[in-house]
Length: 269
Length: 269
DNA sequence: GTTGCCAAGATTGGATATCAATCCGGGGTT
DNA sequence: AACCCCGGATTGATATCCAATCTTGGCAAC
Image (cartoon, rainbow over all chains, first blue to last red):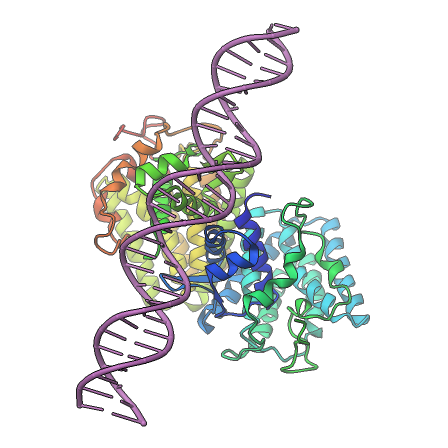
């Protein structure tokens, strides 16, 4: 795509939302420039991009750190996400055609199959993507980008907070949301979306580091295989295959599975 | 605040939303670095910030330009704005206390007085700020930032499109929205918000440059009075006084006044 | 032993000079 | 008139250098 700094920002973003870089982690310019093999300036530009997305915070003369949102901000992010999805849902209940509803149902079905197959990582990802799909069906790129940004920030939040609840009924929620929307029961649908997100938030407890801290060098190592200037950096369609059956840390960014309350990470290194 | 590039991004943002820099205008690195007296790198960082906010677009090896959204994107921006404000309104109708309603009414009253006094510039600005105030009352900083970004982009759009309608009933809209919300008539209120924004959009015609193109040097000259390192760059509270009775171009970023359809700008520079 | 201060080192923010790659425009050729 | 090629201009990026600031460690005073 465009610039080197964008590519580096993308890698850092991915590392953050996959919990390889945890909130508070120092992102030193020199260190990153050595890791990526670019100059400090390019790294700085990447960090500016991250900060604009709310994934990093830059403190003058102190450097950049992975963002560490307060509980207040976490609630605000979920509130905003709920608001956006409710609005989108309201639009869809009027405007979405049969093909759209079918696509939603098909997505839920895929997730159901993943759950049935015991592929928790994939199921989790599909659960995330349900919300993204919902917004994509609104055909509003501006809204999509806003929503994607909020989703990234909620994913970041999961590095800070623990979730211990049964996420299976969240799948039912998705299905019920579709039904309610298609039937025009908008009020109930938005109510359910609210409940859905509140269920996630309620399971969270702040001030508890779930993931161990990795140094940037360790955290970023897996992403550096990509050649600097190889195939046109088609970064959209690969993820699903990659983690089809991989239980590594990279796949664990959903509403954590309840079968283990603290030792989620199998120490991939 | 923080970095030099942020300060420059702020100035450029202001110049864009005040229509001194019009869509499509080339933002050359060398030119800007000379204007601001900084190195190209700082300018580039500022341009990255602008691009992230959707106010500029950077084309590889061609440089940065003031964003020139398509009609499609313009509609999407207004759609997103409507969605956000409807959601916020829904929250407020439940949660806002008497003090909040009073604040809203007082704001509308101030705008009414400005209209009565014939101070169109101020009235216009207050009309804009009504929406900002609405979102601020939701006490959600994340939502505020999203909304502010959308507002900036709509303001940018007004460089591309002409509005010729009577904006006085938009003031009535604000008043009615407050009434409906306070009475819990949420459905009607959200409907009115939608209509309100659609009224703005309907008055617009794309592909017509309303404002003449200024060179960046001309456009930015008024902002360069600020000393490089003087008082802590408190850029929040000044605007209102500045344009209290100033009919210059800087004040003309509302729903254009109908008394003159093309020669809005009194050629300040 | 604790506290506080100060200097050295490290890091960031920024400037400058330089270079390759790309884009644009003009002049010459066919 | 259409086409091609070349040179200037601009961008993307690097290396190096410098000032300001932050951190840290040690040293002195209490």
